[in-house]
Length: 147
Ligand code: DQA
Image 1 (cartoon, helix red, strand yellow):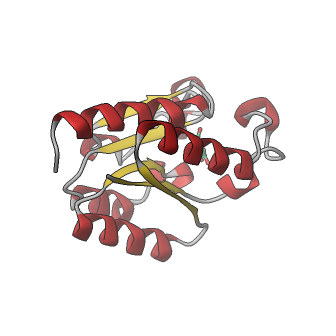
Image 2: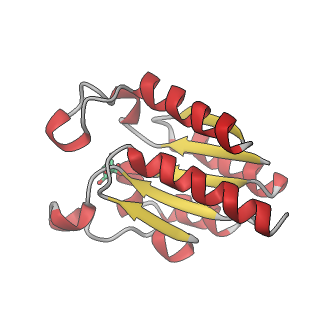
């Protein structure tokens, strides 16, 4: 099964961006690790990142049309984009929202995600390991309930 791993704004700068918060793993390393987990779990994993909201909306629409599963780190859009949330609400496959940092221990404006209410589940605060855990979960889930 196909799983889209979609990353929002500034996540392309992983590895150099606020390393105390987001860690030393680069975005390229994250892509490679998601692809490796996909191979191990028998998932067709497609990893993307964009700083443009319209591009993200297009990817979510395509995932909705395909009925594909999505792992989404909406980054800053989590906290205010009803457009991203509405696109997520159209998904027919499972949606795992991932945050590298624990948004609940950070600034007040990060405590709420407008996406979470339409997500199947949320992983936050486990670093980039959250992506691996999300993919392992989806592999199991999709094998139990084929789309
Ligand atoms: C983030 C948390 C958001 O608050 C922030 O805007 C990000 C990354 C995370 O992965 O921890 O860009 O989603």
